[in-house]
Image (cartoon, rainbow, N blue to C red):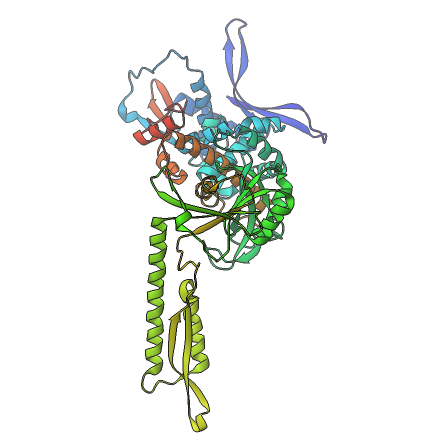
Length: 600
């Protein structure tokens, strides 16, 4: 057995190109001559030191024959020999005849076996289903990417789905605990971190074409209108010192208040799939980002845009009016109007009764739909009453403290303390008239101090206090009645629940890339991973499984692929590589995803 380096030609720059082969000699009985046959193709970039090839081949030959080594090999030699040994045994395993169901074990003993090469295949197997349903392999091939690049793309996307992290952690996962290489038929051991970074950049270069082709592969059921889109702006925070003009330090609910953040605008359909995404090169607020993504998406003129309250500013609504689009947004008008006598009753599939009341705006260009449920009415009323009770208790405490004998509270300091209390109870404090009582003390009554506090309720109609739990929707599409408006907007919470995994499950938060291109390419990989996750969850929900992606990955992580090696000094070595039997919950997921129970 030996390794040979063959010249295959010259590159575009004129440098010679080589390929490496692992060969063995055998005697040809028909010609009475020795010939060579290829055991394994090692590729053009085989970088193991040539000075160690002879020792490597001797060590590998001993492993294949099952003979013990007289002297222990170095760690470098042992690692490479073990890697080549696994590749050879995998290749030979594919050549086993289909009719052969087992291997006779005469002369072997139970104590002679060992289990090695334990790899996870459960989450990877299911993740490949999402990529297949979206047709990612075909899309990459149509865009002119090579087979090697397609394999790296799949590794990046599935790695982001199963083991979110940066390029180095993905590489360690591929080479360490994951059996993705076995499922894809690719050896990831020679892959380096730089190869994955270049693959990220290649994906980013074709981002728009990939998004457009994925949109064509997304299933569109009859109850899902392609002209309805939901716009959202997601912010990612970073560790370290990222170099990007769109980065700005703002409040982050996941980490410290000064975390550097960047905005990713996404247009979603009513099933939560991304139609278009834009990374903002300059930090923009949520309403101002709408113009950029509309320019990138170029939606149809009859598109209906649905936005939640954070996006539905007067500026955003005016912009949509100017461009001639339809919109359905939550009104930010603080005045609540609800005519219970004119309201219509609607019973949802969840047996919840909703009251709907609609009226045209004064100019007749908008339909305003007010809705509430008895449950939300009671709940919001109880919340407001609880806060009002606490606020009044605190005001009474201040009154008693400032009226106490010998108390001398400076008036300016008292007003500052009262302002802090108003801010703490801002949900109800604007419903009260509060006044600080004062008196003058000291020489010539020159010093003013607080001598108590009085408060009373403001009598205001059509507020959240008189109409708790009422939400107002406004739309310029006058063809929809109140029930259609509510049912259309009801898609937003469903999509928000789905799209929340874009932030927490495919490695969107946090991000560790310092450079501008790396930041954008990482966000692009996370968006592609989210598309696959959403496709899998959609298939599972249709078949009655509603678990989150994180729960699914944790459950499937103990479905492994193992290698069983049985040794005998006289009869040689038998090696069997096989997936473990799936457990009951594994079978539920595989059947719901229409996958064979055991990966082949």
